[in-house]
Length: 208
Image (tube, rainbow, N blue to C red; front, side):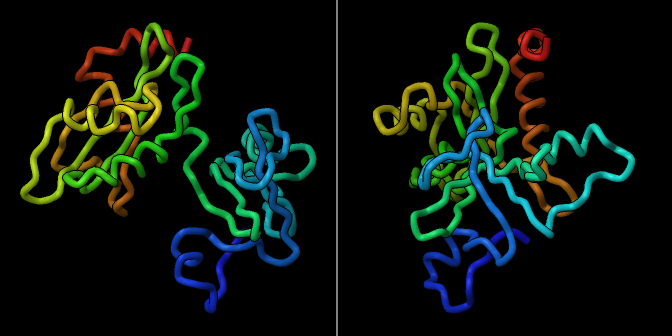
């Protein structure tokens, strides 16, 4: 447990943030170089204190990847801190898409697409691209009784979000692949699209 909201916090804080840091717990948000970022800027949420494990049993390499030399646990969560000390989770670091040198956070695109009147649910992933490194793909589930096309959704995006964030590929689906506990499996969405679009060769270049 790193942060939490209080029972008497306003509803907006309880539903839109993950609260404030707990006592005797250190928290900071860092950029890709490990430097702390100012309030309001996005970075990886790190924590230090009694709550942090000593490490993974018998796995020193995994421990070193998770906990740095100064004892900071790198959670893998992207977050921002408001000036009032409340934290908001904005995505996962490993989900970040790097398209032609631009960092793209799927959750930002997902939250924008939720404003589309016909979209009920959406998942955004990065797909390998031989020229740009990665490109953006979206799986969209429409609200009951609604219909639209990928091009109409792209047109909805144009001029409202940066051009490099507009999904190149949009698939309208009935359901998402999920675990038995109901968690959406983004890695399967990515693999399904790689197979469907014949991007296996680009994926090999990406991992080379």
